[in-house]
Amino acid sequence: MQYSKTSLCAMLTSKKQINGDAISSEKSKNHGNKTIPKINDESLIPAAVLVLLVNHGDGLTVLFTKRAENMTRHAGQISFPGGRIEANDPSPKYTALRETEEEIGLLRKEIEIVCQLDKYAVGTGFLITPFVGFAEPPLKLNPQYEEVAEIFEAPLSYLINPDNYTWNKKTLRGENRRFLSLQWNKYYIWGATAGILHDLSIKIGHVN
Image (cartoon, rainbow, N blue to C red; front, side, top):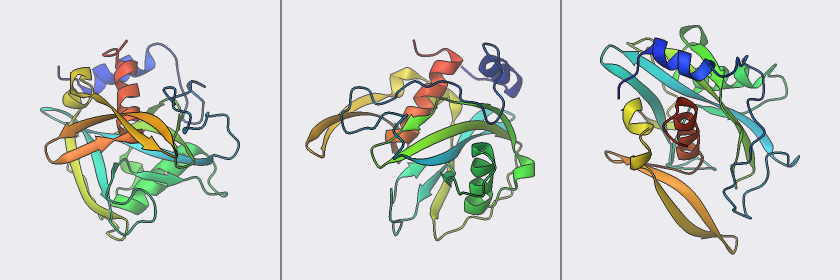
């Protein structure tokens, strides 16, 4: 099913109004994994990401980055633009926009933030605050190749289809860990990125 910007905005904001700095839900995303901290763990490093929806005439897409292979954390993984919340950032929303501009060169004035998704704790020690925003094509990008190896888009309709997700298991720190993944062409999307997309699918009503 294809969504327009108008219809999707209505779905995301119909149940509750969320300003750019509000906490949408204090719901844990650890899926029973003992190795994943709770979101109220004060040792977690706060971070923010942007789920950027590109408003093409034939349907919405989601923008992703592939992290450079020389990165200290999450090298080579598929991710959303974003990063650590710095001490002088006035809000998580500001961080998401700042990091997006720094990583892919898209100016924050070109992005319309519409809502915030649930916070997401990951086993690498970060507490991620995801925001959903829109941008109109053509995007004027200027990637920072020291951090970003590649930028690509995938159809929202594919990404929010629950049939495209798989639950996986791996051993981490001596514990069995479950995580979501999906494949889009040559891109393997997993971990927090897949989990956040799954949460977006819940917000839209595709997953119970």
